Amino acid sequence: MDFVERTRLFTEELKESGLYRDYTSAKARIMEEPEIYERVCEFMAISGAYRLKSLESGDESFDETRRIGNVYWGLMRNETARAFLEAEREVVRMYRAVVDAVIGSCGVEL
Image (cartoon, rainbow, N blue to C red):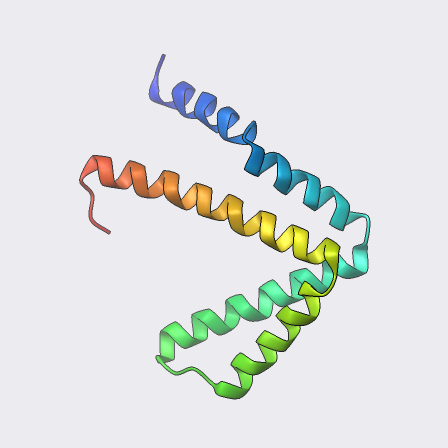
């Protein structure tokens, strides 16, 4: 079995994990509420753009941080949005742990 095939099998195992099943379930629920999903996508876009801008400039605007925080907490009041955001965060943590383990075991410093 070659590297690509082992990676494909490992990916299938990840997709069978409880964390991934929770994520796909939360995503299916939020897709049933398009207006909530759209708000979550808008939040992700503005928060991601802000993070990139902050990294580039080294400056964090209090007003912008506060605005993004208000959007976030508004979303967290909605059970569907909260479940999706929390499930997504956990899947991202799982993937990050996998990447860190691979990089660490290869001795690559990034």
